[in-house]
Length: 461
Image (cartoon, rainbow, N blue to C red):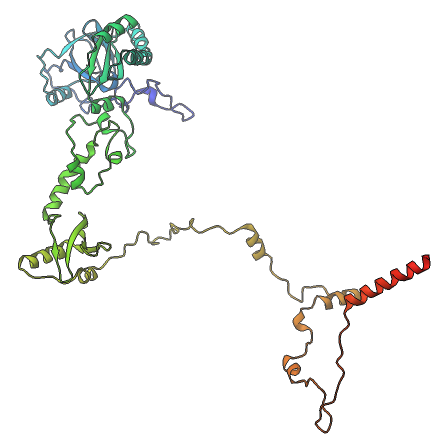
């Protein structure tokens, strides 16, 4: 169910009631803890039966109470009503009506004749709503100034939330503290600062997180602020049974205590651990004694290591470990753990199969080629027939110079080696040859330059 203000306009944009989580129908998610859908709203009561005259009214942060409709007002879900307060009156929203209210009262062990069920005065007028919204607007400033007063008094307490009554004459201050706090002076200071009646209410860490709300490590809204009402104790034994590392940063919630979700799957782990041996059991093998390291409960795998060679772990199945323990009970030594580990066949799991022609999941993992390489691959070498031939002598010389060195004729290395160093006569006698020394170009150039300088000096003289 939702009110008309949650619908969209002509352009497809949601209007939004701007109630900051307090929807008029009481079923728009945040701010409405344990919202109940009235699936009996379309059904009529049998003839002669009167409707149940107790209604469930919701206040700030999901606080709900039951109120009687003694004056038989025509009230439906989502109506804003003025109810009995202590003292004065309070303003709330009707969150549930009809026969389902009996079920909710039965869950909370509240009877229709108890003193906790108070009266509904009237439907809220526009003046009541204006005073109520004005009082709600003072809560943040009151909370800020209240914390300043607490710090001046030096009290060891934390002010978590402030809630004004609908008539604006009373405010409830919710706080948390580890020890007992004497706040008699604090009440006087708060009453004189805000000119209102003050009520102090201590809540636990979990109740504080439930009132404030937030997002958990799982990415969803906190369980305590949406549906969880029974706050049970959570011990570190729950984390040990589930083979979790005892890291307080990971196991603690926003309230600073251990997460409530550690108890959700604890029974399943305890049932699975009944078949497993105790962790202090020592396996006796021919190679030596092996001790427990860790386990995977649902895959039924255990890791053991030798006392002397603790750098290597051996993976065993639950059946193999029970077999070794049975042999040890009969005073027999089992074969080494390497033999048991070799018997385990690991199945290769295929995460993705291209059955219907889907693309590979890793198609974006390959690195992209640079644009330079793409341009090079696109430019193909032209064939010789496509090249234009020019018969001009200049182009011939350029073409000859551009020929690769491999095309130039060079003497073979074998011919060089076979050439004799000294020429031989017909009589097979070596002929004396003068050693031809290559002239040193640098020395000759120096000599020429020196001679030119001397000639110039002589001419000047």
